[in-house]
Image 1 (spheres, rainbow, N blue to C red):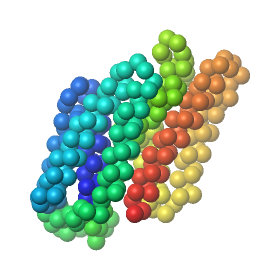
Image 2 (spheres, rainbow, N blue to C red):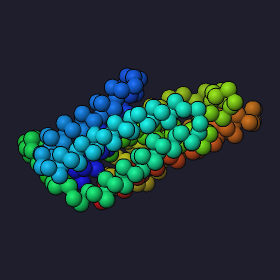
Image 3 (cartoon, rainbow, N blue to C red):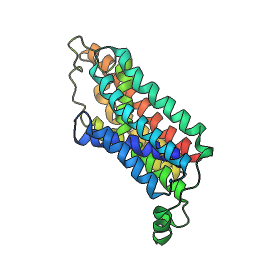
Image 4 (cartoon, rainbow, N blue to C red):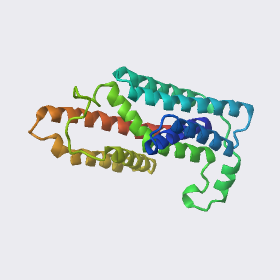
Length: 245
């Protein structure tokens, strides 16, 4: 599973860097370097591992450029390119995960030396996959949600290209928080508690989405809220399924 973990870590690093510094080339370069560096730290130095690392680094680079192009191009269909790339890369990494050797190197020695109960006896491959899965929740999840919204035309429901007027704020922070909570609760065996997070979000949004004024705006915002929320939850639950394997 180490190759899959490297892919997730590289994608997460790319999108986190872009959220902090909105420049054209730096995020994908940082993501590729992070994937290569972490790979070397876990002993991925055999010929097959090195080839896999460079392929992962190339995918991370292409992902960064594809996302930038997908958001920058005016056509709705442009969003399908990065979405398709993400799905294909994820499927390929899962299919090839059985070929990846177990992680070793400095990271394994560090994990053995750490006395934290949560890390006690945790395999290095599992630690890397957890790191990548939680990293994806922070910024890549937002990117995927926005790509889906654009691909359906929901992100720009008005002709002027702007969102309808709304008092709903903080979605880019609430999204990562709810995904991290859902994933952590699900991993802890508290799936019912995770559903409470989902229900609470709906209750908090209900007053504005049920307003009797400006019904057209309400309908647009309801579609935006439902599609964005379901996609966000899918990212968290999909990561949970990956971690079950």
